[in-house]
Length: 83
Image (cartoon, rainbow, N blue to C red):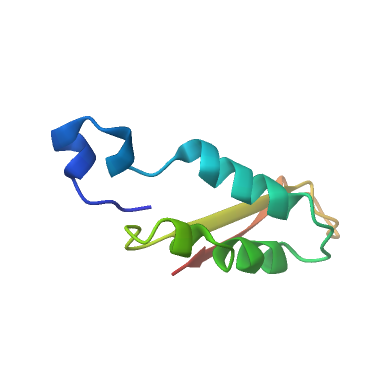
């Protein structure tokens, strides 16, 4: 997430993004059952993140599934969505 530099100058919590709120939004979406990590990433991107934090100029959602069910060895499968 990119942010303007107001918080750097003001040292004021109101001038930055609340990581606790971001975590809460993402946790809620991660608790929903989905077959595809792409679907989860899309849901997170389309949640109130951008409406709650309009100062975010760019957001990247990256989700990894550990030990995905593939025919072979794979540590993880990852999907990224940038908006």
